[in-house]
Amino acid sequence: MFQTLDPLLHSQLRLSIMSYLVSNQQSSFLELKSLTQATSGNISVQLKKLEEAQYIKIKKGYKKNYHHTEMIITKTGIKKFDTYVEGIKQYLNI
Image (cartoon, rainbow, N blue to C red; front, side):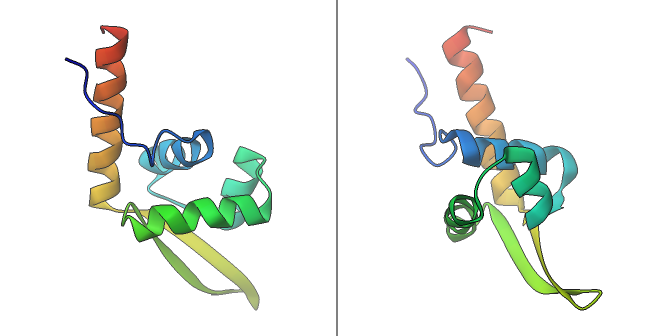
């Protein structure tokens, strides 16, 4: 029987964000926006969904007098990502 895949991670943009954060632990908003080629509005909505699910933490502040937003993956986010990857492997029979 196949494992149910996490619908939150099944979105291409959210999966891209989480994949990057799993490898790097944290990222700025501008870095994620550049990497994903998403619009500011779209990436903001997707980050909020990940934050509400407690997959990431969003820290807002200032860096050199400019607004700076940092995303940090949580332990929950890492576990959910790992479970998602294992589910995909099951579908691919790996």
